[in-house]
Image 1 (cartoon, rainbow, N blue to C red):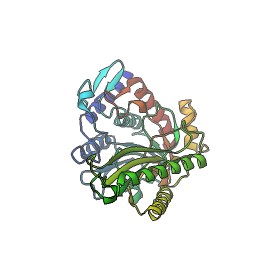
Image 2 (cartoon, one colour):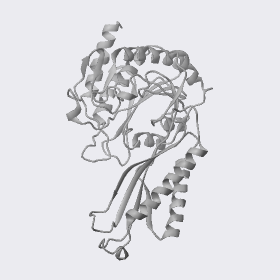
Image 3 (cartoon, one colour):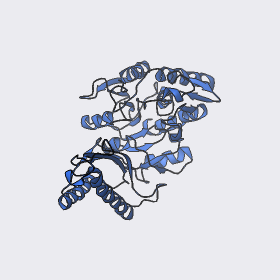
Image 4 (cartoon, rainbow, N blue to C red):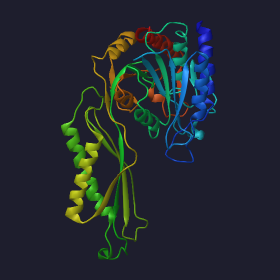
Length: 385
């Protein structure tokens, strides 16, 4: 296929995918089904000879994973991506987010880089092998709700699918191989006091003042985490804890009866989410016993584990060889730990720049998409031929 024809194919398929809304959000009025996206992908892949399975996500109506397989046998290579996008602010976009626009060697559109742009690239790379005998199967995986709940990836773990040996997740990394990332957990702490007239503090218990004690405990916990855990692979070498939302009370002349704090923790590889929550619960219980405050810790979503693939992994070494870049670590989370838990050597490698993700006027550079096709062809040839 000529460069001109390949560019036209990539643009046409990406235009079709961008035009299909597939926003995932914790807010029901923004959340969309991704079924139309996976059905479109399944149509293209079926035409290439792939066997396509649509795998609905249990208890999540309208959310569907796609597993498309070319060839048979044990092991194999998985090219994986998520089909959902984040919500958007229409007033900040300079064009229709659902209509692909080309300008200055870039394609603009919602999800163009994060990460609908990966699928036309993966399909183009795969199409070069549809008439060749494969010694190991090639699988394309398209998941639901990576941007919000990771329910698609969690469902695959429950099903034990896919069952390949190697997995490339095409998140936007500028085609630099990523072999580690931090995890993320988002938690809420709710303090309940007792309202009363502010002229007499004895008439109530101020939840905001109790939250002040909780806040100090959190900051002490953060200091301990950063003292005890460090990984020089990361630009921010320690785990982070960010208080991101706080609200309490309803009027200056009333004793605050309720205060709520939301925060995230981004742990390093080797740090266990459940252990972190248990430690937090223990510290808050001790605070409750010491002060008599009413305090509750609640997870806002299940969290994503940190991920690390060994530098000795054949997939990491092959990716470094093909791209010319040493593997790196990033702070953002992906579906990598879920595929890794299924037994895959896993790496994150895809076209586009993470700095464009979740931004108005999101774009992917055309030249990088073309380069990514050739990179994936080399990976497929190495592991499937």
